[in-house]
Image (cartoon, rainbow, N blue to C red):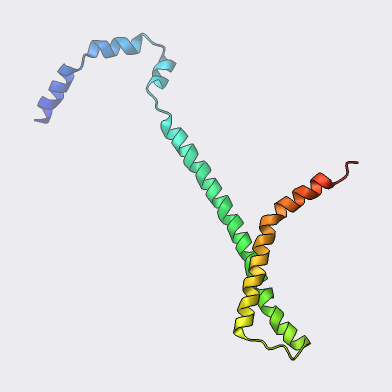
Length: 127
C-alpha cells in the first residue's frame, strides 16, 4: 500500500518542472528562496518580551525590598515613640496604621520623584 502511494505521488509531481525551476537559478538564491523567516521574527519578539519581563521582575523585587524596609521602620516608629513618651499607648492597630501610612507615603513619593527631578532640572540655572 505504501509503495503504491509513493508511486502515485511520484507520478503526480512533474519532476521536470521541479528540475528546471532549480537549475535555472543560482545555487545561493535557490537555498534562500523557500526559507521562511517568520519564526525568527517571532522568536526575537518572544526574546525581547522575556528580557522585558526579567527587567520588570527585578525592578519589582527591588521596589518590594524597599517597601518592606519602609514597613519595618514604620512599624518601629510607634514603639520608639512609646519609649520617648511613655504616655503614648502602643497597640497593634496603631502599628498597622503607621505601616499603611508609611507604605502609602513611600509609594506616592516614588510616583512623584521623577516629576520632582524633572522640575529641578528645568529650574536649574545653566552655567
